[in-house]
Length: 425
Image (cartoon, rainbow, N blue to C red):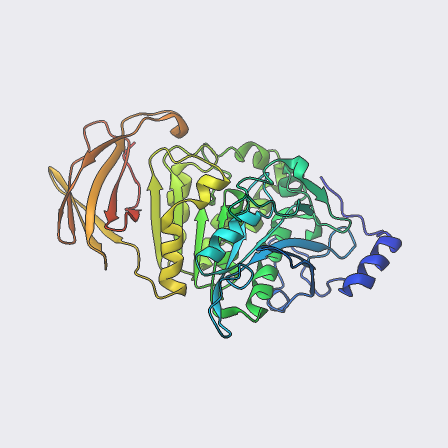
């Protein structure tokens, strides 16, 4: 178990306070699973590190860790930093980007969203900072430039590392050494900072995260109702069940296991989510199994959609690539056309009927199914074409022996969404 060390380095603290004048957070509830939301909604103190190039870098005030104030590194890009702003002052929608395990702030990710017309902030949630952006001959940041851990340096006053001991073993006692607490708090702080920028429309912001960033997105969307949309990719709750690769680490907590679940598993929080949310995952994801994903989706009582892709690869680039992420966010932050919304499933003797709301004509529908048992990550999936009659989808009944199935609908933009996943085993 990690024990908080309250004997801070006086020299390090004085240097940090001299530069940032942040001070140490106070008044927070020390119970696991609690966040001082009014405090986190305040604009954190920050300073720019570099404002040259298309992607700028900054440091902002983080949560107290091991008795000292912390700083969080972030990249920021918008049409203004890219030199693509139209004449006169404008307000752009904003988005917060949360990296996954082994990741960091990705300059290229903020650039991609800035090209879409958003002001984007991506922060490092492991107490480090990546290398300065590397640009190709086309002016675009090189993809995966900070993928390796050797591309990052530890901040003198960084928060907890993004490792299993900090994620799990720290539970118990004070919350200031719990990585999930820091991750959610520092994302909400980044959101508050983003909303304060002069080129951002604070009423049109969204959040998306990948893998552990998707996990954190689930938590943040359940805590911060200022977001207009949220897209967790891969990440979900119920990490303590079934085939979750995190289950052994949670089980090893012993009598602290239930405390971690109650405090930091999204299954304890998603019932509070009122932010419109799009869940994105693959059928065979080893980190976030399909049954846990569906159970997480079911907990949300507000507006929600799902996009399950057969054999979707797991990774940062694969996680930010689906066009549906941008289209979903656009529909809430830029008055874009919404994604197709499949309704409830009607299972008849020989067919499946689904009514789908769609402002864009549908062009394709498929039944995806597997008859395999065993590990979900190793199951083979098959597909059968379905018929489209206006907004009604008619698919063949899943073959005998099917264990898991769902229907996918695709509109003329090639935007795909899916029904809830059905489990027959």
